[in-house]
Image (tube, rainbow, N blue to C red; front, top):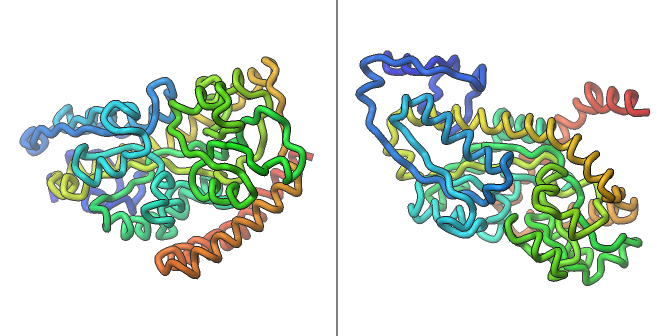
Length: 368
């Protein structure tokens, strides 16, 4: 047990866990002693789904790598790569599963074609806010349930970032009721894409680095990404004028660190603790940065000519009904989906009931 003193952390048995215990602080210093000096030198590669230009979402990967290096005294090093450098941005899970890289940073809903339940690991339409999502993953059994599914792919997952509630996408033309969605070509992934498809949208799934050109050249009519800060960096405001809200399909999306199970099992427990801690730091840091950066970025976009537009009530209502039908259909046809959906739904009802009292009432009053 004395070897665990190499880390100045307050969470018990953190090293052997797969992400179920919390740490008391994101800024953790490493203590060096004779035992830590005997730990092996290990180098990993991390494939990501993000371009380098998106410093906040790609920054989640960088946070993990920097923290791992610092806490291990340089003995455990991970090098991150932008989407497309090792594998395309939407093939990170495949690379981690195959062992082409030891780990990756991505969004699990990109892989709903492999298992629709993976959508819950990121976000689902009309789902959980960022804090509710964290509560479900860390304390509501969510991450344990997801890792039972990832086990089929020889992979384990850690929450490792959150963008906060997203915007509703960029449109070249202003929407005019439900009929204007018919045949519209839009980049939108996850179950939100399936809902949009039910509403008549021709759904496209593209990695972030390819979205601007597709929108600018007219290959797509609309696109969603994250929020004002990243969207402005990608130049979406130069290709489309109308910026819709809210992003009902992603009210609190988590980004995931995926690790090859065989590579994980070879790690000393100290390095498992370090990696786990680094993911906690990335999760909190990313959300905090987006909350700070998006407000100013939105104001700059508006001053630059972007027109902010709310979704019509009819579109939101149709999307909500289509989402509920989708969940019902998937639950009927997929026992894994039914199991995790029922667990998730019960948690959502409970936490939303509490938040109506402690948060929503406050926000409703202060924003009148």
